[in-house]
Every structure is written in C-alpha cells, then in structure tokens.
Image (cartoon, rainbow, N blue to C red; front, top):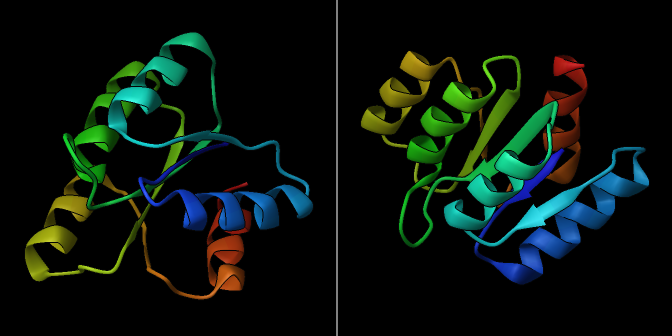
Length: 113
C-alpha cells in the first residue's frame, strides 16, 4: 500500500503499525511524491491525507484512479465537511477520521482486501 501524509511523524507511526499488521507499506510526503511512486509501482491500496500542500488528497485520489482504476483509495481527514464528503462520495472513496484510532484504519483496510 501507499501511505501519503505530509505529517512525517504521523506517517511513520501509522506506516509502522500497518506494516506490523502484515502490509507492505511505501510512504510519500505529498501528492507529487505519491504520483511519482504510482508511476513507478502498482499499489493495491492508497491511504491518503486530505489536507496537504499542493494537491489535496481528493485531487490525488482522482488522478490515482485514472492511473489505476483498480486501486482502492481511503481518505484520512480531520476536516470532514459536507463538501468533502460529497467529493469523496463522487469518487467512491471511503473516509476515516484523523487522527482516529489506528484499529479503525486497519478495519477499513481489511474490509477492502
């Protein structure tokens, strides 16, 4: 899976926990890094933050879906407005509250397997 978040401490912590749960995890600090990783490697899942410098998580999700329509995408956000929910619905991207509990993130990931 590809984990995308501009908060390095959060990304490392969550990445480590997800890896300990049996997933191979690659990390990116922003949408540009994520797009470079997606161009280089195929991922079955991308977990991305919503609010990042440059492209936000939903913009990244839309581009990622064009690159690989079969990849599952989960959006993690502390800023869940009705507009964000509507945009996520249009892309069929499930959302998880941030910071949220890691077991909730793992449950969503497991449901997509």
